[in-house]
Image (tube, rainbow, N blue to C red; front, side, top):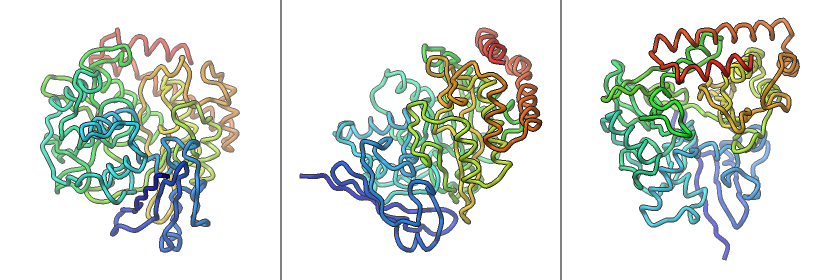
Length: 418
């Protein structure tokens, strides 16, 4: 007997929720059908693979990342959020191999990133606001991540089940005065804004070599990226009760207390597998032209390519390149995110540079610029601006008291790739 499941997909921006369509699984196929009212609305949530010029779509599950078309796979979290989700399902007697992709979307319900929400949740959505002690929740998250505990508390499950990325993190609301923290999923009380906090490690480990300085290093990277002319979200360091600093970034998919913005990644829009080196920066630059039709976005995409290489941010996989769509259907690059030192798979970038994953010469950058119709003079100016911004690294590390045992290997890598 074939399995069949279905779930309603809705759009929640700055107006009442609207039906987008119906998503279903039948056997080994995923089916999606747009609501006719949404087709008339004309907003293209996924212009390449789910255009509204067509009403019905069918995909083979085995050919899709996480078993879903990219538009909906984007709603699912990565390693950390999946860990939280799997532990909660297991606590309810459901093993990982019995969890369908639609079960996961149903669990997220209104709590997915971006503007899409999914109707028919497996549990009642908890809309209450609770105080969050950063140090306490950080220690619990790290214990779960390291395998020291088997089950997440209700509060950690609440704030940690949606975010992407591998590192332990949570969605919180921060007061305007910056001293009060609450669980932050949907509409927040007056005087609060939506943030994502990443928990720094208590000590270095094999996979998290920066330990308690993870947050500080990412803060420094965001500061350098900003100096280099890259658009970044608002960011700050939060010092917990034990003195460890965690990086918090303001959510760009939540422009205010109540509204939501449709967010997508290159993985979702291009059906690129973020678990493999599946895209090239030349493709991203061409895609920026197609999607945004804006030369400024194309130049910024090139600027990010130069920065990621020069700053040794090799964790630049397909889900770490983001886009936003406003209520009129206009697309633009999201602020850059997940900018920090990362060694990458075998010392290579997840996103390649005309097929190269490391040891990329300057002439390759100029060829990539040409693919976006960026002239050589502008490309060289961007390269110089990025390199100048990265010269701040040593000074910033001293300003933030980063020990040389953490900063020196990063600086050496930056010098080597330059």
